[in-house]
Length: 328
Image (cartoon, rainbow, N blue to C red):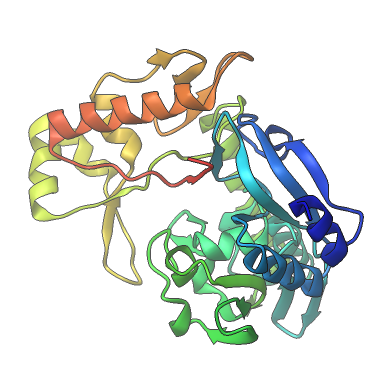
């Protein structure tokens, strides 16, 4: 029996073939998924993952598509598009399914005078993606408000609630990036009561900053993780440009200092550098954009490689990508 028929037997007639993934990616790049399934409940997510495992079929969980780079040939397996929508609030706790947009949680918090995720205004993507990549900005991140993450452990074939500590959050990292058997179903976030107008004003300021500094072309957002500043890196920054020390930001909660990857990319003279249809943004050096409709994922891969090589040669620093590669 063909794979498609087996998928249909298990998941119903909603299985699609050869669905172009660029329409589900903020980068607007990449080829088709061989099989594509939209999961509208937690049960459907679990069933789809179980079925893929039974059929020995590669699968990928797709959220908002804001931090992925899909191969030009697409993905030779099953893409499970998560569109679970349950969202509720109880006192200062917001519970959200993995498919809920991050912006919906931020809006609910603001409307009810809950503070803690103002930084997330304007960031695309879903709760599942934000938790997996520990998304963050302006000195905070998803982990700061996370209490519980509901998951399905494919290896153990059971649902598991994980505490914040068990999620092993780090800068743009979590256990979910390291263990593909753990599938995020939802999460619970705790907020502090705040002044609604102050929260709203803070969000407006962040929105203005993003509008002024970020390009309007398709991208994954920031291409590379920011750099944790050591004494050695501090000296390199000082030797290149003493004013660069002002670009170092220290997290008051952790004491960890970071500098944007854009600083190094800019100093390497790479703003505006283009390979094929992929280009380093003139507005923000840590954004690789799709500058031409003919752009390909391979153009982006080549440009990423060139940027990493140039920065490594000039500063001795190894940049790390934020985006997840699909089908490579």
